Length: 77
Image (cartoon, rainbow, N blue to C red; front, top):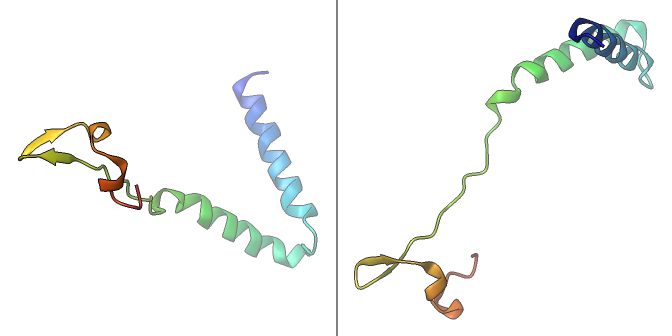
């Protein structure tokens, strides 16, 4: 299938899902479509969970944290 054909099929499938959703009356279609479009547009603004990288030091020199005994590492590690 060509890319254009795939996009047309996908758009038709999404339209069919919007129309046939349970409780979806014809006058609710506009609000559902608006809600879907708004979610689609703002999906990139979602906050991501920050990752904290642990750095271990011995006498002021960075070392591999695998060399530190487990009981000396933070609990949430």
